[in-house]
View 1 (cartoon, rainbow, N blue to C red):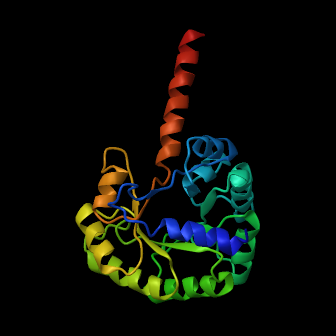
View 2: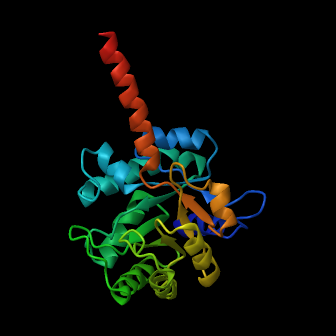
Length: 250
């Protein structure tokens, strides 16, 4: 199966009925090869790496891991599950400031068939102008063809906006530029439903501890559910508890 074939199969998973028997596409976020194997053995058909979790596993704060190390980590995750035919989408922040051709070549070399691309500029925290981000997405699409499933992250809610219109406007631009899916991170339920209804593309929702379940997010229209760095934080909390017990036993 070619990379384009694998991307097509992954893309198709985004278009099942999120309110149907299977619910939305749920993508756990492995941060290393070992966690990728755990999710693969649990039966998940696709995975989505979190930049925060991968960065932490490499010893960096979120948003500060070097591109070389992030690409290498993604490649190890892909290799760990490749024999099972599991698709991997990589959170690659804003593309690390690389030219589109270099970015696509390096990402495809990892074996990933999808990516998150956010509209916050790495390093500055600046929310990019919508057309600026759309132009970047269009350049990535032109270089990748159909070999990558592009999940365009919209950070307006992350930056404190409470109005759906800026997110809707950005989402429409990003879809027109070639994005396969739109990810309005931290969108509240009513905004998520409006985005799902107003965009001609699947919508990715973030599942958080204490928030709606993946099924509930699907009922709001989310076709895809991811967890950001939440699963990594949960796991590190468990490790911290073990460390505490070991310390007290000493």
